[in-house]
Length: 187
Ligand SMILES: Nc1nc2c(c(=O)[nH]1)N(C=O)[C@@H](CNc1ccc(C(=O)N[C@@H](CCC(=O)O)C(=O)O)cc1)CN2
Ligand SMILES: Nc1ncnc2c1ncn2[C@@H]1O[C@H](COP(=O)(O)OP(=O)(O)OP(=O)(O)O)[C@@H](O)[C@H]1O
Image (cartoon, rainbow, N blue to C red; front, side):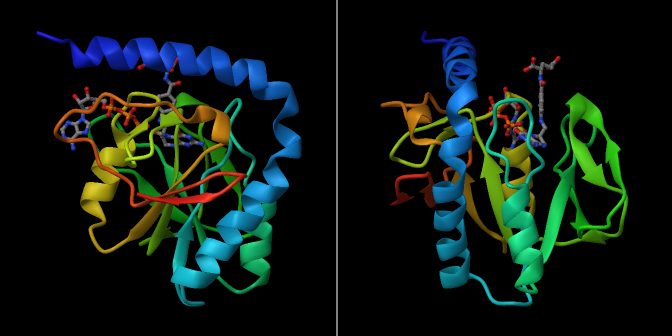
């Protein structure tokens, strides 16, 4: 039997080292990535929507300029707090003066009030053109997208994170869109 868990771990490992290779040059790809995210949001969201972003972990796109821009455009911005494994993420309101705290796995979240997101930006380590994603392996976003059934979502990645096929398990939540610095992929 093919061990999907093992395949995922191996791919995760490869994608991690790829990411550290690209780490130095990320910054030049971030402005076009943010532009594409803004276009997508202005097409699918209304001003009242709560947009869940993520605070960057090592090597991820830094979406903080996007968060400021969204706040300035009067969207509501939220960030996830990481719970004990096995639970969906909870989201807290973010604004420029929000007090930030460190949570599990070095994730940073605002110590503010809890909110319900309408649109969730999903971080990933790797993706394929069918909308499958691979994350850190906590299963947090799978559970979160299953929990917030009404929320729209899009994966956020740099184009170098694309692979031909991500191995999937039944609970993996496919993304309907993936936004990179080069394009918006509708799956
Ligand atoms: N910016 C950002 N925030 C995020 C995520 C993310 O991918 N990016 N998450 C996406 O889910 C959640 C946090 N999930 C995470 C799960 C594991 C590890 C981590 O560092 N894992 C260790 C192994 C830990 C272990 O299992 O013992 C590692 O990879 O070395 C990090 C984040 C919520 N917030
Ligand atoms: N909806 C779910 N219900 C039950 N178990 C789940 C669910 N989603 C994920 N899991 C469990 O979590 C583990 C990690 O899942 P997976 O490898 O898909 O994580 P990931 O998507 O890479 O991580 P993340 O979403 O945190 O970035 C799986 O091995 C599985 O046991």
